[in-house]
Structure formats: structure tokens, C-alpha cells
Length: 464
Image (cartoon, rainbow, N blue to C red; front, top):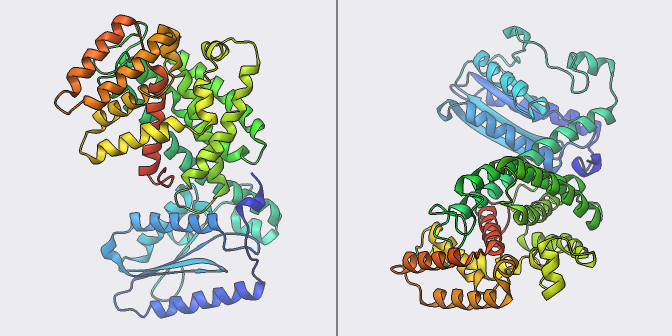
């Protein structure tokens, strides 16, 4: 984290700051004249230094405003107004509630909210005086740096402005990084859960059976998905914190985190590989998303999906160097034999199978009234008809894999809502008999679902 990436903007002079305080005090007096007023909250941000208005500071102010609205019943709010001046954002809540009761609420927010130490929520009585913490027997506010009395540290100038600003930036960075990481991880694990739950899936684990996989079942996937939640969060945070590094350096960090995620997976499943390929893809997507969010820090709006795909391409390309080494994994051996790049190539190309087949089919079928389950299965079949699935080639050979692609395409062209389950259940039985499993396409379905959920929660703009 660099201070200048968090707190940046136009500095204000001391006269401007003093003038803003004077205007705030005058406005408080005017608002106290409103009929029915019993208290006022004057809310501003507690930011040291000359820069008072910057994106994450405004975002934090919005969080504080939202928290106040969640704690104070709407019927108690007579009037609300806010401003976004260069001297810092401000808000006034004119209330019908007693000032002491309101002060207990604001003190609780200042003490308990992760951003609370940066909130300055004065409560004004009808006589124009502020309610102090000592009036209610509450402890004084603590210093950002040492935890002692904040006013005493300020008077004595115990800590430098630079140190206070650095701690302020750290609080802001950690809060908004964590907030976005939680949302991204939720989308990722939801995608994993929806992928395994989509039924029937030919040769794959679903709610009906274990497909062609005797060593795992539906609950193995649930255990693995739950174990990966903190790993998904870590992928995003790595992108956020180290996105300014060269692609190969960032990729190396994500690869190391991916190896740690594999350890979590194997511990949860008793050594069974449920999500290894998907861990790789998720690290690329979530690491790219974290990088993009850090670059757009404080915008509080969806980031550009095309930008996300471009970063995925750059990071995915770093993995292609694996093919220059001696083949060790099944994917590397298939590349040596057939020049099929598999999951690495898909990421390096910006997930074309997802953007061309998986996600569009999902959206199209949902718009036609299909359930998310059935739309997901149809998206899977669409990708099975187009993608050179390394898992299918590994299990059945190139000729069988090509035959299965054509078969999937034929089923897709003739399937109807009435024949959906019958045809796919028959295909499932055939795949189980042949020990076939389109695991690569299953991973792409999960990424398609992840993209869909990232869109729907407002993290990214719609994918084209």
C-alpha cells in the first residue's frame, strides 16, 4: 500500500478549513430553528493533513451515512442534507430524538465500525452545545496510533502528521479491500456450488450421482468449495496489493497462493482432486479483478469487464511457459502430444469459450425462461460441443473426444424442454459406461457462472 494511492487530491489551506468550520457552526444554528428539532448530528470525516476530499474518503463518508440511517428510524429524521466540498464531505441529520440517546448511537458507531475512528459525529443539543462523551460516562476517543487519549496526543503533537495519514490510509485500504474481496469470494464459491449442483451433467458429479468419478461425490465438492473460500479472498487481495508489479511477478504470487489453495482442497477432500483446474482459473480471474479494483480505488462502481479480460490474458500468458518444460502434468503431456493448451491456453486467450459459448448460452436460456439449473447444463453442453476438453482426451483418447463433441452438438440442436432430462440422463449413463468426464468444460461452466454473478452483484460491467 502506498499512501499517495489512497489519499490524493487538492490540498486546502488553513483559512479554508477554518472557514468551513465556521460555516458548519452557522448551519447548525440555522437547523436548530426547525420546528420539532431535539438534536442534530453534524457528521464529517476525521482526516489529518491538507487533503480532505479524495475518493476513498468520500466512500468512507458514505459508509458512515449509511450506518447512521440504519441505526436511526426514518420517522425520527426531520431533515437531512449533505455536501461534498473540497474541505471534506459533511452531512446534517436533524432529529426528533433526545440528544443523549443519539450520542450513544454515534459513540457506538465511532467505536465499533471498522471505519469508525475516522468518523466525526458531533451531536448538538437544542441550546447549540455538543454532547460530550464524558456527559454520558463514556471513555474518551483513543488515538489512531498508540491507543491513548486522542485529544491528549493531538495537543502534544505526539505523532507526526505523516504517521497519522499512513494509519488513516491503512484503515481505508483494508476496509474497502476486504469489502470487495468478500463480495468476489462469495461470487466465486457460489459459482462452484452452482456448477456441482447443476443436474444432470454427463459423466460429472451432480445431485443425481458421482458420474464417472468413483473417488468423489456431491458432498466432496461441498467440502472442497467451503475450504476454498479464504483462498478466493486471498487471490483478490493479492491482485489488489501487488497489481502494480510486473505480470510475471504477480502471476508467481498467485501461483504460490494457488498451490496453497490446492493444499486446502486436498485436506478437505482426503486427497481427492475436485477443483485443481478451477483453482488455477479462479486465481487468474480474481487476481485480475483485485488488480483492477485497486486501480479504480474509490470509484464505488462496476469495473470494466473488458479490462478484466485483458488482465486475465496478460496473467494467463505467463502460464504458457510451463509448456517449455518437461511434461509432468496430464495437461502438459497432452500439449506435448496434440499442442492443446487446455486451461492455460483458455486463460491466456481471455476465456474465449466462456465469453463465446458458456456465458451467452447462460444468459440466452435464462431470458427464455429456463431455470438456472437447466440453463447451466445447456451452457455446459454448448462448450462440450466446441472445446477440446483435455480431461475427455485423457480418459477416452482424441478420437473418442471428437466423437463426443459432435454428439453434444447434435443433442444441443434437437433438445427441447420436454426431452431435456431424458436425453441428458441417457448421455450421462453413456459417459459413465465409457468412464468419460468433461471436467475441463465443467471448470469453464463454473467460470461462466462466476462472470454471471460478478455482473449481477454489480462488481463488473456486462461482458460482451
